[in-house]
Length: 345
Image 1: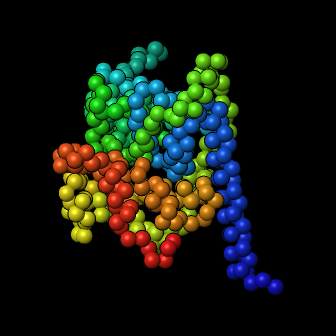
Image 2: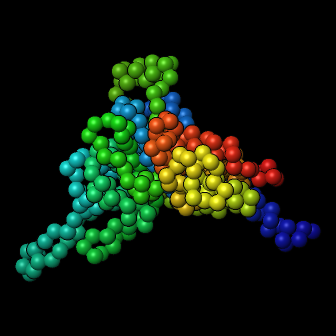
Image 3: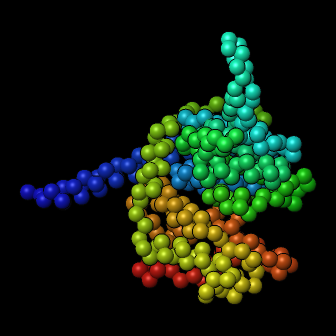
């Protein structure tokens, strides 16, 4: 007869395998809906889905017309979550995002009281469209919501319903009429995703699809409670100590004043990645492992998410700008330089 401890271990393994299968199947359902309207951009779609299952925010950068907004709106349709779009403009005010208090009079008692009118931030999915077209003061209205999942207005704190995602799109800074996002704002985003032009064959398919019929409505294939369960599973995934140490060391070596920092970091980097980078590297690695059907994070998972997690957190200096060295090149050299665990996890 099997020992109780052995039976419990077998049940835990069976439950874990069942949850992994369900999560992978849920991802496939969402992906199938997105593929009905989004052609190509496989890497971008995968990274956005990783952020959703990990519970993080995304900043998506690309020139106009590359379906950034369509991708996020499609996710809102495929998931049973409340969705609000905020079009950022130069005259947008913080209260247009968070909400505002108004003086309201009771018709019966004639008494006047302050009433809070909720802004569009009170939704599960927020599309911050062209976030860099509004000044930093208005951009900062998202900070508390993104970090603490709450909004404070008039000395009162209002919690936001979970899950809560901010998916922001922005045009490249080189374009006119834009405001650079402050580093503290960028650090709130789990991923910084760059969306490029589609391949020639994909562009032909896109033109054929968009000029032949109206865009079809997508089916809702995942509910709020289901997504919250999946996010819980992601956080429960174990991380071996060597893998966690590798992620932390990778981030630490991006800081020019850190002990043992490579010469190319000292030469070209003003500020390295923050503590949030280590947190998001491991969390995104967990999500990638789970969505691949594995109950454990590997070094390969950390390397795969390093670029979108770190690219907006490494601030290069004037010397790097003169040499046309971007943060992506720094990250690639770090991946080649920082020693990997000897165990080969």
